[in-house]
Image 1 (cartoon, protein in one colour):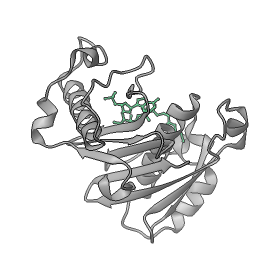
Image 2: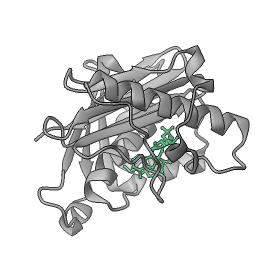
Image 3: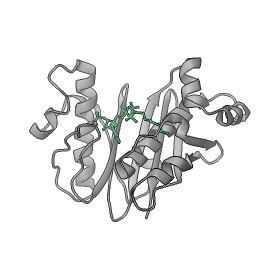
Image 4: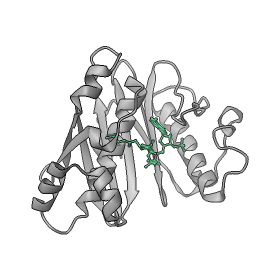
Length: 217
Ligand SMILES: CC(C)(COP(=O)(O)OP(=O)(O)OC[C@H]1O[C@@H](n2cnc3c(N)ncnc32)[C@H](O)[C@@H]1OP(=O)(O)O)[C@@H](O)C(=O)NCCC(=O)NCCS
């Protein structure tokens, strides 16, 4: 994810040992006792990466617990994001003085069935996707961009965003995307200066789709 985020953001990508690394006591309740092995590995890699990303900012490797809504709880003055998919996990953090919010998402290639696709893509997005060059599974890139948008939006604004609440335009030339948020959601936000537009980047290598975005001051 290093390539998709500005230098003010510290990024850690999981290596082989991180999936079976150590969870700190304050982090364990985020996993629950009955978590299956795959969930345990994903959650562990996320926490190990999160703490390594914190040290990359020059901060101590403090625990990163999970909030009741399952979002990560970062130390005061820090914003951050975690993603994991099969065999890939990354965390990114930044000082809140440098970045208002950061989000990222990784997905392995899979077909989105027509019902799921209808939930995710707005009609105008489908029209634009149909005009993009063949060879990339664009609906999955769009889906990932929307998950990234939610991870930027939710920690800052604290409200839900439906997949239909963002209209995402992908630019395959520059590997960037622009998400326009439903004006009603922006108007209803109670934080100062809620984002109406979120700009991000994407990359597709083999079957791995990655997206990331930051909101600056
Ligand atoms: C929260 C969500 C975006 C996570 O995405 P995902 O593809 O399922 O999974 P990822 O591996 O990429 O990310 C999971 C991590 O996101 C983080 N996360 C969970 N809830 C979060 C929230 N509300 N805000 C920010 N980060 C959150 C957690 O760190 C989680 O990992 P962990 O449980 O191991 O700590 C997704 O599950 C979701 O709820 N989506 C619906 C909302 C949405 O995307 N709307 C689109 C708006 S345009």
